[in-house]
Image 1 (cartoon, rainbow, N blue to C red):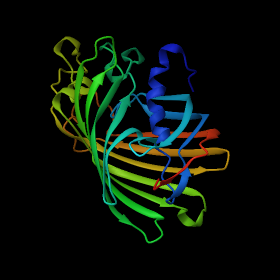
Image 2: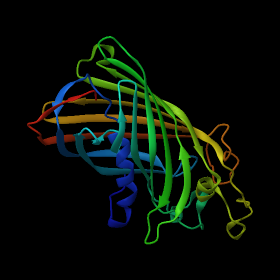
Image 3: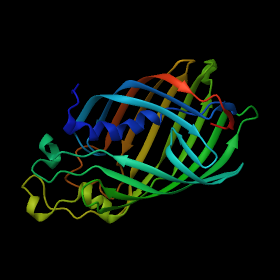
Length: 283
């Protein structure tokens, strides 16, 4: 397991979002307006979906939840709510990806590094079903994000559409206080985005890595399982995610070394403070 350096902080910092995503919602009720804490986690992930390179890090785990009427921060990241009804939510959401350093070897050896990226755009969430006690909920999420590279002069990397079905279960298998989350869906990326990760320009072609022009379209599937529990003074969570490139338009890229990747993470965070003000929340 690698130790973090200042040069490597950008990579695990972006992947901290995966640990944050392992916080499925509990039952509705009155909860603090905000909660804040800090902890540590361990995470292992591929350089990018399809890469043979797997990296492992110990990472900081910030724990922050804000339950405002418009601005919210939770397991889905920072959100500005545009619409919030019993059947639909609409919000602006953010996403990020870590840098890919070609010096690590693998399929991209000798090619330019890939800068870290940030993406933002609108998302629509449809509440498909709730159990009578709201212990089980099924949602459809439809986020569309425009992605930019993080550098002195950011440039557009492309677009992504990642619809998912999300199932949350409170107290699964009779385990009180625990929360289980299951998420699955396809990934659609445009040609420009796929070219950044999977295209091979003629200047970087080798006998084992021919030139390749990436196409846009179906770019694989993602399956995520997360388990967590909020104790009075601390939170624990873990997740596993599978990226599957079978049938993807970039599956034949020479930069795809394997069709499936597994990402794993576990974390613990201590709750350092919370608001005295209570608000009604469905999370």
